Image (cartoon, rainbow, N blue to C red; front, side, top):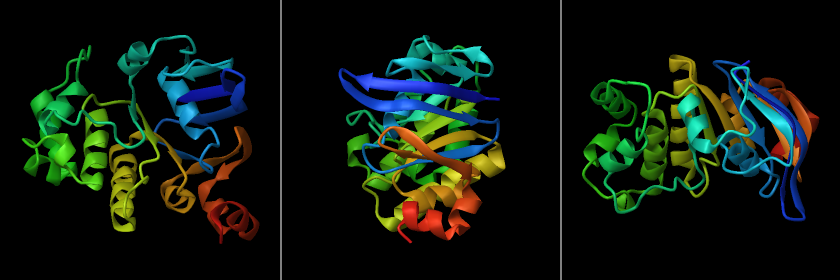
Length: 236
């Protein structure tokens, strides 16, 4: 198992954000955690990355207990995050933002080859490589955030609300890029999304959160074809 979270709980002071949630991601899987705004999805991703401490529970990555490891060690172990709303360095150029993803990278990677590969995935970034990130469109910024996470050749990519603020056409493009990375490159991805339909369409399995509690887990394709689940969670 690549990632295994067991009975994790997260609190901010007296506010309980996540309660006893368990989930897992196998190597090569694309798994979604879906739910409304405030369900606890982002808190879960941040806890995996080491940005938010757990109140209870454990997180295993490749069989190792990383529950109390700092974020930089988790990054060094092969976990990368695409944060909500991209969160780029606005005054740095596209190229400079990309290079921040390789900062203090311990393993040696052919950086020039890696950047060239990223440009084949996201051709617009090569055209914009000398522009400040602040001048990019929303869709271009999301592509740059994904590319920045990918430059280090991660084993697990955490993606937080990638559709937020994007037009439907751009949402489709970004989700297609994630699907290709999973299917063609075997990249393991944990995706958290309010856009349940789009995320389920590219996922193998899914977990549904309601106010910090996991209320359903199962095969994504079965969720899409189940009338009761569609009505309850997809608004169809």
